[in-house]
Structures are given as C-alpha cells and as structure tokens.
Image 1 (tube, rainbow, N blue to C red):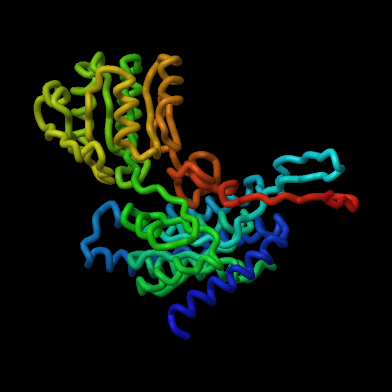
Image 2 (tube, helix red, strand yellow):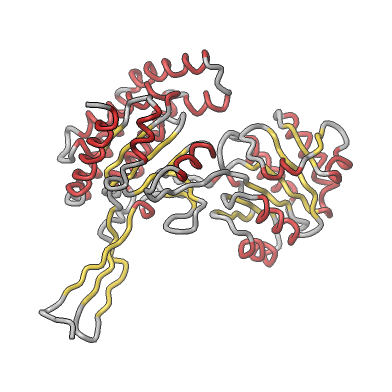
Length: 419
C-alpha cells in the first residue's frame, strides 16, 4: 500500500470510529483518560529514552535553545501530561448538553444539542506533550483524532502514542479513534490535507509558516493563529510595582511561546520613572530592548533603535520592542494596527480606562493587571487545549472541549406535516 492510500485508510477508519465513539458512554471515555494517564507515568523511563533520540538529533541539527526546550521530556513534563489527562477526565462533558429547547405553535418540540465535530486533524511541531493533550481532549469530547507531528519529535510522539494506544486496548473504545501518522515524509502531510471527505477540522500548531501552508492547501476548515504579537500597556494610572512584575513575567518566564509579550507600551507620564528600573531587570535577564526615540532618550544606554518592522515581529526570543505613547487611545490604536489579535494586557488602577481598553482592543484574550502568559487552556481551567485561535468564527482563544463540539437540532413531533 503506497503512502497516499495509507493516509486515506487511516482517515476512513477514523471517520467510522467517530460514529461509534458517539455511542460510547461518558464514564467509559473518562476511564480511558485515567488509564492513559497511569500508563504515561508508568512508562516514563521508556518515554524519556525515546525522547533522548530526538534530543540527540536536535543537537546535531543545531536547533535553537527554545525549540530544544519545547522538545524535552522529563519526569516533570510527563507528570504534567498525565495530570492533564486526569484533569480533562474531571471536566464537565459537553457532549449531549441541551443548549436550548423550544416549542412551535404547531406542536413541534425542537431541541438544540451539543455533539462532537467528528474527525479532528492536528498538525504540530516540536512539542511531544501535544500528542497526549490533543488525544485526551478529542476523546473526552467524542471526536476521533488524526495527529501528524514534526520530524524533530518523531521518536517522542510515536512513543507517547504507543503508550496511549496500549491503554486504550483495555477499554471498549475503538483503537481507530486515535491515530498518529508516523511517516516523516512531508508528502504524508499533503495527503492528509486533501481528505476533506473524512476530516472535519484541521488544527495546525506551530509557526506562522506551517499555519499559512495548511490554510492555503486544504478545503478542510482550519482553526488557526498566525502570530502571537502580544502587548502590555503600562498606563499612566498603573501601579508600577505591579506593572514591573507583570511585564517581567510576560517577557521572561517563557519567551519562546505565542502568549509571551513582544511589545511593551508605556504612558509618557510614567515612562521616566518606570523604564530605567524595568530596563535594568530586563537586561539582567538577557533581554535585548529595541525602543522608540523617546525610550532611547530615557534609558540612554543599551537600547537598539526600533524599526517599523519590529512592531510587527513575533520574536519568540529574549527581544522586546518598547514604545512610549501619549495616551491610552494611542496604545489601543497601536495594538489594533500591529497586534495579532491574540493576547494583550493593560496595567491600570482606573476602572473606566480598563473598560475602555477591553471594549476597544480586538483580541481573543484581554487582560487587566495580569500577564498575557495565562492564555493557555490549562491555565483557563479547560484541562488542556487543542490550540489557540485568533479566528472569530466557531472558536476564539484557547480551544478546548466546547470548541471541539458543534450542535444538531432534534425535532420531536406527533405526526405533524407541513401545509
């Protein structure tokens, strides 16, 4: 069987399994998640051993420190993966939820009920934990899944999938409900994108290049975010100690992720007091600052000139653009013009100003006095996430169980016919 036929066969079986999965009880799906969690922890030494093969290859390829960090499995990360599955099992099951019920004058009773989407394809890069997170969320929401990971994490992904699949054998759930395309041939990815008659939704998780490629080469609906150009605006009404902590966390805690701050906006009234102090600590943490002319006059040393391109750049690194603004409206305009509609924050003690910011900025997640680093399915209490969407239709922000469902109308009558 050639590669194209292999991928088609996987998708065909996944489609069939998705119909059967809709009949599996909630308790059985939850039991499967618990067994998977136990298996991950029990097989952690095997997983770390297989992950080491990917890490050795990464060193030979001279991958960036940020990518290696995302790629690495340890006892800690495996424990987190297992806990994520357990937390997902505890969440309220959205499938079968009655969204509304209404009765028509002719006696028909119409019920709007939440149901699984069907078959979810997830295409991702360098993060082995995505394998277990996505399989867990799809199973919980009654969806079959087809995963295609990147070459750089091939051994890790296959090992995790093998452990989860063996756990699934102890349940009533079809093994075809979870699938991993193990081929590292890029053509396998292309074949998957053609299968709109089997796959109901594609979720790409990775860099902008991957996401744009998926969106441009498939007829399957795609949930996406191209960039994570996240801003924090330090208002003239900000508590500067709070602003300092929020901004340091948003930039430094994990710079290589989509919810890290890439641009810091500071009101002119507090810039002279705030910028020198935070610049000192940012530099101490290894952050390169690229500032507007006013920023460079205030900090004076060690700040590169920010170009127009910097305001539109997702660094995913210890680099930060800084701009001093005249007022809140200028901050809002800058974010709406240069941001990616992902996550943006304001630090202010002025409620009216906070409300203005929340209503005016067009982003999936907005924060008042908190770090943008919280844009994450687990942090939101969703168990995990399939991805983060900056789209406006169907799903927006961290995409978890509810976003993996659609709905159908159930209509009950007593022999009514339309006149």
